[in-house]
Length: 126
Image (cartoon, rainbow, N blue to C red; front, side, top):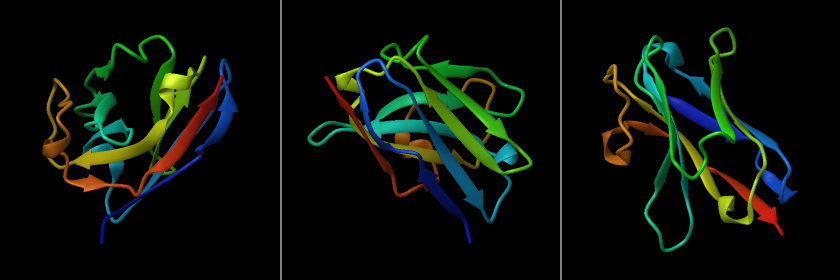
């Protein structure tokens, strides 16, 4: 059975950093496309960082480009989201996702992802 479990969320002051983790079980993360998304109440889920395959490029949303970095550890079957220079507008629930279909150009459309974690809350205080 496929599971994704996020961790690492919390409350941080503006300008600070957090690293989110997403541990996968039941499949090898490296065989899937994957992404990080975030959502605030009343708004659509926003793609933060996506990669279509292990040898493909990683995309970043304009709002986080230069501040957030997605990485992975195949041995741990885990992907990470390093978030630096956090801003109050980064406050959201963050989700990781996996997509069975791999592509060179990653998808940023949430409906194209097959598996989702439960989410982890990130709160940035001003």
